[in-house]
Image 1 (tube, rainbow, N blue to C red):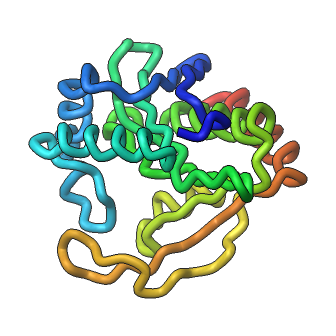
Image 2 (tube, rainbow, N blue to C red):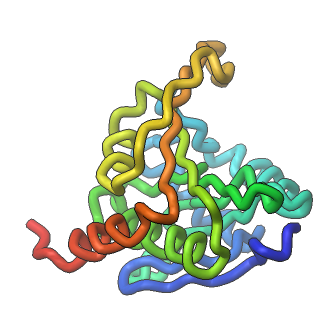
Length: 199
């Protein structure tokens, strides 16, 4: 693993990011089953029965220096409610992607995603000093695209016929990025979103 992206625990008020472990299997299976997230055709969330293999895959990529996977803990309940990662790590060009993110249905539309993105982006730009953070999602995953755009990330473009999905369909991938000079304004906006009263 690149030493510049070493396993770390990141903590905020509602969310805590801990290095992925096989000990998280049962909670991740329960989170994936909630709302049958794994059945959304435009995502790649592992079904409960495939979660162990997904943990193995992510930890294998970590061992190769390509990924730094986290489990997401809801601080209000102490339960693991999803996953997120730094991936496509490129130390030569100081690039990283934030992705492979999903949350149990109950955690969606809560402060958790905003807190996670604030922690990850802060770590990437302020601790690691990356040149760019990238986000990628299925071009038809409007919920994910809106969330990325709310962060303040800019659309770089669409990679057409980029991937073959598990159902055999071809995925066009929307690619977004944040650059270091954009980070202070994005950080202030994320903090404002967390501080404002919630309905």
